[in-house]
Image 1 (cartoon, rainbow, N blue to C red):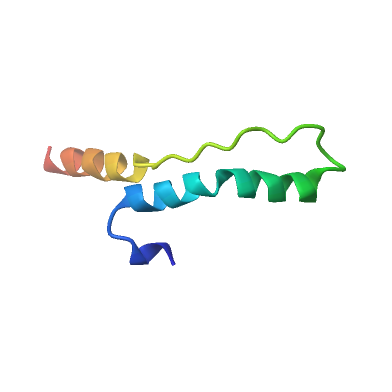
Image 2 (image 1 turned 90 degrees about the vertical axis):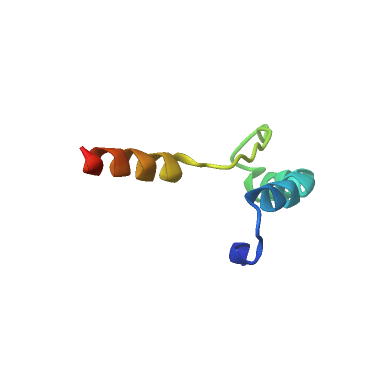
Length: 61
């Protein structure tokens, strides 16, 4: 479970360490449908935090 990690950076690091293996698995599954498997990039999506901050600001007005 991803909830067992304290820092989002820990999760990101684990995913980045397994990027090559994940891309290989995708290649095996999609080889008949795609010529080339694109590079995988993981990032922390903090848009929900931004939305909550904006919502808070709007509610104060």
